[in-house]
Image (cartoon, rainbow, N blue to C red; front, side, top):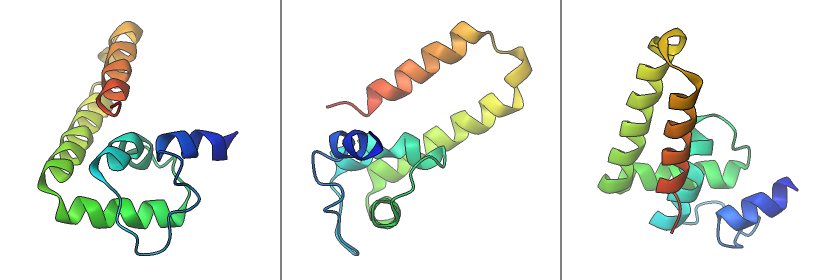
Length: 98
């Protein structure tokens, strides 16, 4: 099941992502939130994401924005209603879709 989900998220390229292989912006977009939440365990995908984020300013900015949102939410965790968190997660998930 995890492999099927990762294949969907990488456009059927996983586990075909090889060491040092560059990922495209849409692939990064589909994997970014899982990467930031430490839920991605494929070392080739992680390396590809990290390399892409270092070289691609728009994707790097998106990752930085997600990190800032995550830090802000964690700081105010007890003050946020559950429906607000759900809306933010839906919004974040929608950003990675084509």
